[in-house]
Length: 223
Length: 223
DNA sequence: ATTACTAATATCCGAGTAG
DNA sequence: TCTACTCGGATATTAGTAA
Image 1 (cartoon, chains in turn brown, yellow, blue, orange):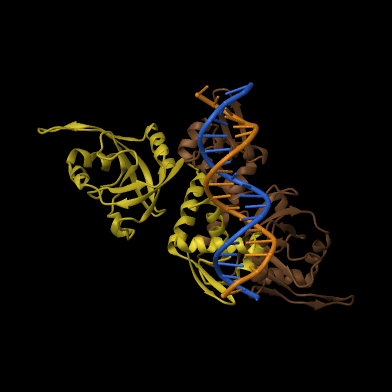
Image 2 (cartoon, each protein chain N blue to C red):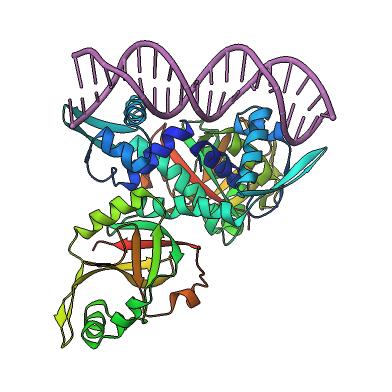
């Protein structure tokens, strides 16, 4: 989404177009937004095409409502700014889209040597399985690499009869501003740096009512 | 400030350029921001000219830090989005620049008939004087008019020997996210709609360390 | 390596106007 | 009135380079 369109969407939100239909006209909007009627018209068309707003255009004006997708765009910026501006502890916000990964992680989580460490070091018994987030921007990928340079909580490697299990680094995290869990960065993972793996004491898909493709925000604490 | 430059400033904040010098190069930034090196270079020059960032440019890279002015721009959006997205009660955020008004208001606040009403209806004894904010955008002026259509807390008119004193409408407000007070909309005021007047139980300039020209954010509750 | 200029290209805006 | 088209001009971006 282009900055200029985001800006118009943002201004629509200031006019409360997210909670009720905003009854207005392109002329009136142009006036308050310091743009021309034509530009407003074009912006609204583009925002509608992108699914950011719903409109009811009539011959004597129009009604505008910001869609859930549009709200997501606003939230993304809001949550990011939250940690930028209110970082009491240092933390970073990631945004990713949920996808179904290979189910291998669930198996690892049940290994007693790992599980015991999670309980001791993170303070919770992890639900067997990880939430896989495909990071939505290059920025987050770069940030993930930076996060990985921080100490974090080390989950040590171990070996059993069959093979060696590698080490992992965990960082306290808050998922969608609600659930406490951890981001886990594994040394040798099947995923590249564009994926963030999350664990939590609960079944996140259930508790947060998530499905594949949903946008998820994760605040990772660097302690 | 243009949306496109705001966007770059915002992205710099995601890279934590507000808390420490960001050591990078235009080429590297271009890569993570999905722009070209030339565009990044130009954006940085413009942001610096606007005083949004400080830079140390050398022949093998540069250091970037977001200035306080730049942080203000980010905060403006953040506080606005806060009430848009987290409005449990309905509320609206205003942004204005502090200026010294005529001192007349201080006199009114001391009139016993007014003062008594403030204590009874707003629950606090107002500091004698109002904080005058010059609203920074047409959007806020429009919002102020809309707020004025809401009921609010009525401070009734009265007359003494000398003259009649008009009525005023008050709305619970939070100033800079910290101090509780009220926005007061007076029927016949010396100011036009581009000014928002704030009262509070404390001396806001002192408590919030404000001086003329400072940006102030006010969350007005519509109850 | 860098940053940032110039010139060419692409995108965006707004005046005029149709429907 | 309204929305939204066309198109010329304004603005932003990028390719090519200089320093």
